[in-house]
Length: 65
Image 1 (cartoon, rainbow, N blue to C red):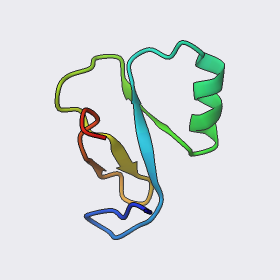
Image 2 (spheres, rainbow, N blue to C red; image 1 turned 180 degrees about the horizontal axis):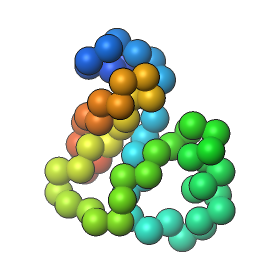
Image 3 (cartoon, one colour; image 1 turned 120 degrees about the vertical axis):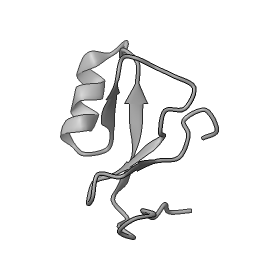
Image 4 (cartoon, one colour; image 1 turned 45 degrees about the vertical axis):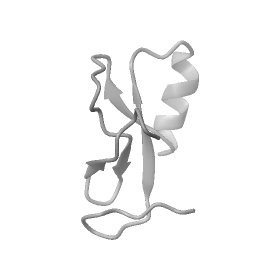
């Protein structure tokens, strides 16, 4: 099932990586190829799971995905 942005209906939706990556080179390659975005190293219970590359909306909850 393909995800769609709740704001702009865009289909360029990628997961958000939270925390510090173990394999930095691999994660940076995914970011470079627009397959992943970085969320930051401070992780909470209500961090968003996805980001729309068209409008920047972050949505979903990483704990339920």
